[in-house]
Length: 244
Image (cartoon, rainbow, N blue to C red; front, top):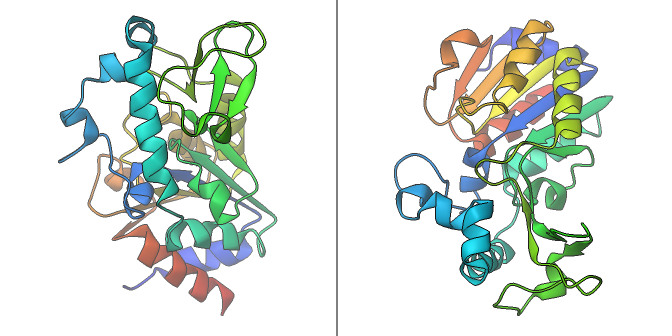
């Protein structure tokens, strides 16, 4: 693949780089996406498994579903795309990951500044007293647990249908996007709002927006540079060129 000279030059001079990531980068680690062909939402009913009403109606079913997903994640790991993003931190002043993924793979890859728009599947919290728990607290628990402090119900720390994104995190992400020199849109079609405002904010702030996806999307014609292929192949090559 040929990389535009302009992209390499801008990357070499960049002080602030933002990586806006979605399900596509996780799919390269073997994690099923939710939308598109073969997506999980084509097989499951979102309102039963990913809504507060669904959780209150059948907490054990929802808990079992998330425990199943956590077990899958334990058998996966960051791919070269995740690792390359983390590696850029060594050479660029500010590297921020804004992710729609809940799988914690960016953290496991070594990225240090991660803004999670949709939460983190490895965390849980009590819906009453808001006490937080880690994944290891309930490794072999198959039924929805109760809070050890107040007895309230414990749910996964993810954003469900009908819930707002964490406003403080989203506001910080938008501000960083506006101030970034380069914004990489990786493995996401960037059509689900409000998260899709992130690359728009970057563009409005004068950032050089680069799309990395396995196929064209609705934003392909509006970005400054579009690279078609797997992020796990493109990002390592881009890092190599950057370091020359």
